[in-house]
Image 1 (spheres, one colour):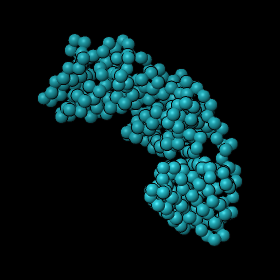
Image 2 (cartoon, rainbow, N blue to C red):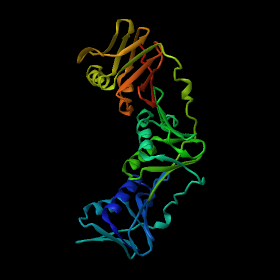
Image 3 (cartoon, rainbow, N blue to C red):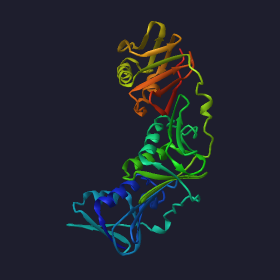
Image 4 (cartoon, rainbow, N blue to C red):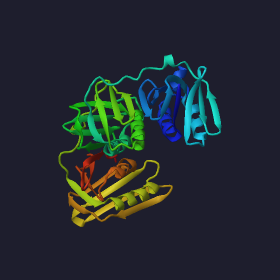
Length: 365
């Protein structure tokens, strides 16, 4: 191997790959990145559940392949001051050279490195990178952090009729985001483990591409962009039929400014105590919408909000996080809170953002 490239491009690829490797793997090669030089340099990493391959352009003088610990290579590249870096094999080890620096990194036998398999389907769904990223960021917080019920610790991703839909629920709240400008891909759906969905979000944030391609099949999901491919295994399970629990009608509705609502919720957190319990008191005939919270250790609050109200009077209580968490995902300046009565879920939508829907279950009295 003898390959020269821009340090920042190489470091960017290695940093993406480094996040996937294990720190205390019983198989040493799983703590490594695999570097394969040909016309370009391929940087690969996998933890057996997910894998990534990034392609780095440069000048190849000799082909070759080597596996080195990801953390050591990453730290070495960070310490290099020069703009250009060369990678060469010295015996069985990797020699990293740049202006004024020379480092030899002990290699691991690369023959044991697992193969990252490509999807068998030929046609993917083309989608705007920023919109796919927004769909993941708008839903991942609503998934369960536990894998006791794997379907709740996953993101449900559905491709249908030119739409990509992401949904997550932990059984106490649910978030759905629809990307409507996708093309191709047929119809399919999968459950992506939460940690892999978060990793995909991290990668999408750092890509320069305007559009990416998703390949969705029964056993894996694959995202491809120019010079990068990320593949994740999926959960073998059934996502809840969430559309059955979304209320079809509401008895009380409030429309208010998102900023005012968020500000009162920030204050309410201080007074909500360990249970983080807040009350919504909606009286449309009196044109009153109050939010209350109290804690023996801190005190109590009752703040009124200006809102357009309709329907029946209602007193209902929620966990404050299950209401506030959705607000950053709403692009509208105003939000609509639709209540279906005591003990029934609250549905939150943006007034001008039909792509996002959020549902929160109330607390028992």
